Image 1: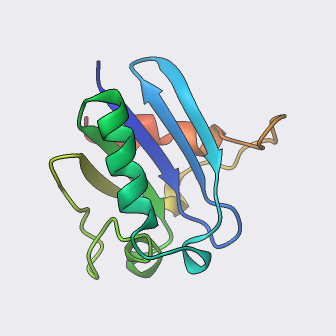
Image 2 (image 1 turned 90 degrees about the horizontal axis):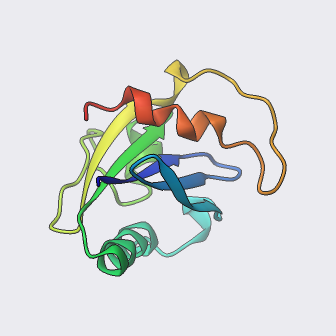
Length: 120
């Protein structure tokens, strides 16, 4: 099964959702990129890839090249990084529909929509 990590980059509370096929296996609301080490996102993805012993497909929804590159998952032009541990596809965040709030860690509908926006 393909393991995906869906990321909505936000200056307030970026959300991450990891799926293993049709199953959600991890939800996280982590601090924004401006508050963490520049290598935090790549190291987190490498750790998850090692944990699941498989390359991850990452879909990153961002407002622009600046917000996506601040995570260290894309270059200055907005092109996604590709390593042995993960492959990143960057999509524009503005094309995602707004969602209602969910319980628990908040609203993950916007993140879930990335499953349908990526090329795979």
